[in-house]
Image (cartoon, rainbow, N blue to C red; front, side, top):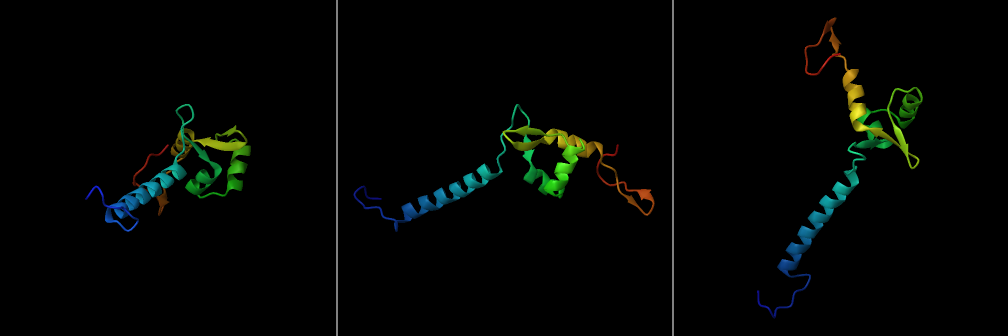
Length: 111
């Protein structure tokens, strides 16, 4: 490239740089949207995240909180669920499926 050459939005090098910036911007936007910073080493899930993960309504989550089934904290008016405790709750209550009267020998742990 000649040092005296004028760069415009039609220049190949500018176009390549803009494409790279768009890719980086898309990646960063996706990362920021899904990032959940840990609080005191623990990652917390929001109502929305947990309801999508468990395929339950947010109202059901509220009932489970009220009944003391789900561990949670309220931080600045927002309900958060400690991910490790939710995972432990799911693991501790996992039961292998019963098919035709026998317990399945599939993957997973049974309690």
